[in-house]
Amino acid sequence: MMKYSVNHWNNFRNPKTAFVIGFMQMFGGIATELCCMIFLASINNTIDTVIKFIALGNIAKVDDFYAGALAGDYPLKGKVFLTIENHRSDFSNPENVECKRTPMQWVFRFIFKFSRMVYSCFMYYFLPFLTLFIPYIM
Image 1 (cartoon, helix red, strand yellow):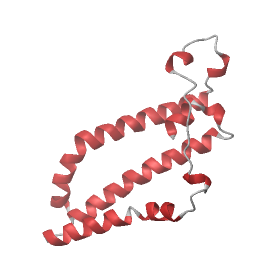
Image 2 (image 1 turned 45 degrees about the vertical axis):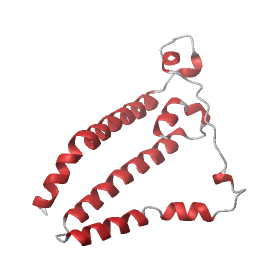
Image 3 (image 1 turned 180 degrees about the horizontal axis):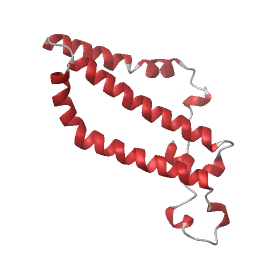
Image 4 (image 1 turned 90 degrees about the vertical axis):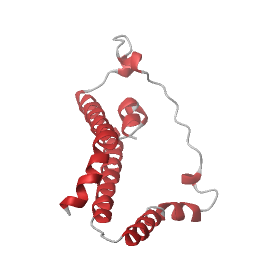
């Protein structure tokens, strides 16, 4: 959502709101994952850890239950096809007036790229080590 709102701001009435919604979704997912890890690391009994892990997984599926209960013709259940109109090479072309970014869009692009880099580094490199150290801290 953040990437699409940064690259296709002309498809939104308010691209700032679209970017902030995507950012909140990303931040909420990371915060939820960290809270689950801390909670599960604080449990001493193995069987309790497995049971609570399964319970937390089922809680995460609540939105799927809600979406499955919606009627078949509900607009949110329809397929959405997002066409990619702007490419990286278009932004470097000074003749393309439609692809000129404002300073705020450059700030949003920096936030998106930085948060994506931090997320990738954390999830793939630091998270395994964090899961080893959390039980010692708790």
